[in-house]
Amino acid sequence: VDTENRVVYMQDSADGVRIKVDNVSNLKSGDVVGSQYLCLQQDEDGLTVLALTETLNVKSSGAQVTAQEVSLSQLAAKAAEYVNELVVVKNVRITDFTEALYSTTPVAINDGSDGLLAPFAATDLIGSNKSVNLFNLTGVATSDSVAVVAPRAVSDIQVLEAEVMASPMYAQVPIAFVGETYTTPITIYGSNLTGDIIVKNITTEQLTTSVDTIPMVEAMSETGFALDVVLKPTDLTTFNATFELVTAGAEPAMFQIYWTPAEATAIETLDAFKNAD
Image (tube, rainbow, N blue to C red; front, top):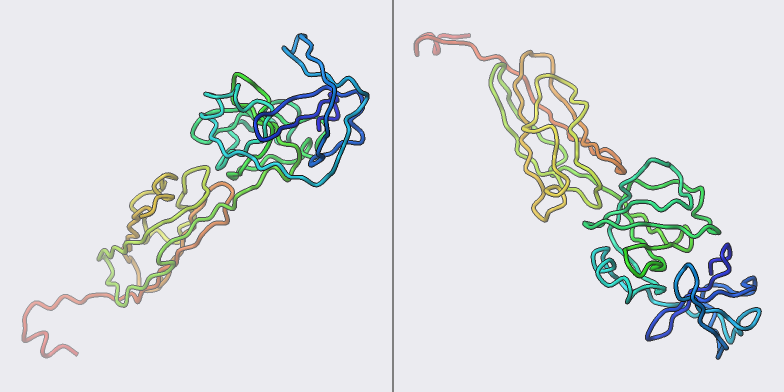
């Protein structure tokens, strides 16, 4: 129910319709409406369905329409088929953060293809924070030519939790000689990411990684991203280090490595080795 514009979106098993009604105050999502006298009117918005009574005859309440799962590319290609119907688009991210809060201004979104999120004016979504995370978007398809989804409330945006992890989360080098190099391979995984993973806050210069930036797509693949952690001790006093894996919308993941520093002594002959203290 779009109370701002006194419009009701309805659908049955076959199609959806947008109806202008003088009084929508008694109507809510899930109402089942009985037989109704309607008329068609051509105006600046195109062909509009008008109710001939002040309000609609509600037979029952609490019915739920199952949203049809579509991608933004499918919605754009068949907009005329989906218009005025309830749809759900999964794994959506916002691509325009010019405004930090939702308003009636359409927001650019992407699920691999571009589309728009256009909130209804009279909804609790207006004024709430936009999420940097991926989310599943439920709403009414309101355009017959492009991919536009209008969520009905905050609850229509199901934010997905982003996560980053290293496997293993810690490693150990039993003996690490000063000046030598020790490489530990680990795998980085991510889920529901909207950006690449950055290696940050390495606690010692004795530790480096094979790359500083881990591509989002590879981290979210089934095999993850192979990262080499390279240790080259330079003193006998440092014996551990950590670094963080950071990406938008997720808690940083920490990797830890421990080692026992040692210093090699050069021995020129076997006799010298046998007689060494």
